Image (cartoon, rainbow, N blue to C red; front, side, top):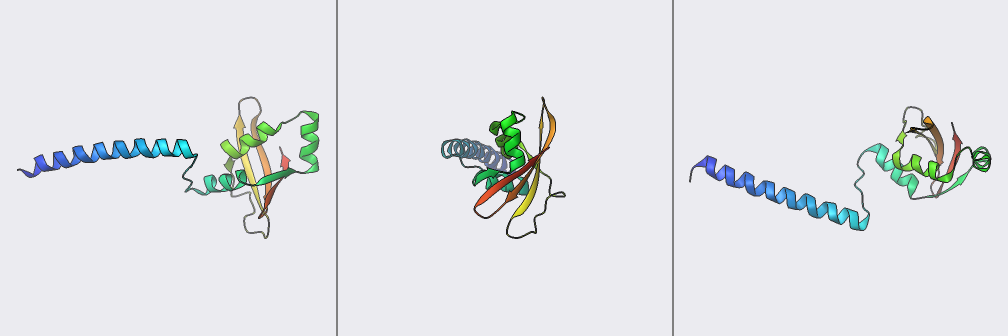
Length: 126
């Protein structure tokens, strides 16, 4: 059997295997809710979503006045981008992260969050 014919069979079988593998892994990820976070932005946001949170007085006043609601704040942790240049990641025990989120209605907003070992504190929204 010539080499090119064997190579064709190999590539055909490999492509079918990759399609099945991608299908089964996608289905498993949807069922279990797992996500594969390898990049720093994704890892930080996943860590922040996993902890309980509280608001500073400034943010509590904004929520009470109706300037922002808790769903918009949760949107920062799902769709936001962490600005590592403005964040203070070397402080101990709580690290401070600046998260930017762009919405059609409000434009670009920034959220400042203190990430402590057991909980997070939402400090300000601008």
